Image (cartoon, rainbow, N blue to C red; front, side, top):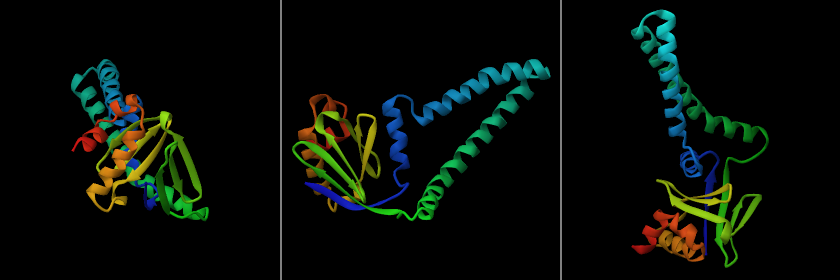
Length: 182
């Protein structure tokens, strides 16, 4: 069984953000930690230096707004910058992707790159709004949901995948388990 389609470079950024949360600390959690540190350190030190709690609080709030603006600009520019760099190197930005399920492994063929993951190293499978994401040890394999022409085709693919994953991996894959039960 396989899923095939065209994968656009940079399209799975949202899926990657979710992966970071499953590996430990998500980007949102990192930003909250930075904001808390800015407030806990910046406000008292600013109040001590300026003699005004209000001025210190306002400075930290404005710094946080600047930080958020910087994050927005970076995310807005990352995809286009990555695609431009690939084009400059003679690489395509739209790549054929085929994901095959074999008895031994999950096989991921992306243009000239091929990866194979034996089933015991597939640790999680979860769904984002636009993708199915496989965590494979410390790597990922992203399958756009648009590759499935019908919801039944998507379900059949996930049922086949889940039948090959270990019990522990199935337990860490509630999105896929829910789809299999329906």
